[in-house]
Image (tube, rainbow, N blue to C red; front, top):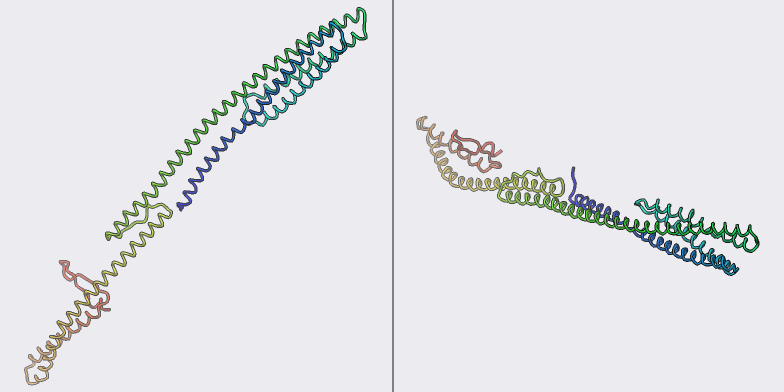
Length: 371
């Protein structure tokens, strides 16, 4: 399968980008810390409301005792005003707790904090608010009995109301103490969760940075070594080709641009080999041409003299014995044969060499080389 260098680099950088995206996805988990910090802020507001509620209740209890002693309507009015403030503070706490529950549900990882919040809400609703309602209602009944009733029955009702008020007061104070302890526990739990998240993200960040760095280094080393080894091999092959060894094998190179370059080297080596062979052939032809010119010059001139003299002798040998005429004819035939050899030498186009003797000596086949 062919994979270009650019595609290899693209895949490598794509993996690095993916690791970085994964790293940012992990770091983005720190965004929950903003939500947890907002929850802590609201829990602090809730605790301040509880402190305010406790202070208002203590001041309201003072108004109750003043009314018990002096039975002034002004003390009852002050009690009612402070009861309204206590109720508003408790309702504000419940609103803040609803907001905290909504924020807590948006946090991706929780460590049981939701159960603690629900316990806190239940304590406010069913202990603090209920005790406060009983306390306020009973005091109002006490004021009514005091203003309208008299005698032994009214006195008994006031004593019963005082007992209920004491019980409601104790329950309210216990509820406020419970909510304060629950708020402290929630705050401590949130702080531990923040510390755990920061520590966890720190470890993951260190691991991701180390992983990205190691992958980048390994990828860079392997990729650079792959390229440099192939280029070094090509350099050695080029030096070998430069020395005249054109036996270059393009196999064993990666299927990419370097493989294309190796194939180009192979084609170049074959072209150079063919060019060298043609150059050698042309040089051989040039050398043969020079030899042929020298041979023609050195052989044809005396050959013409020999042939001419033989022909002259042949014209005046009618009275000579037949043996002598045959000898002159043989001279003419051999000179013609030599002349044909020189003509074949001039027509050589593609010298064909063949063995001349069993000892390995070779000669040019004039008949085939001149065709």
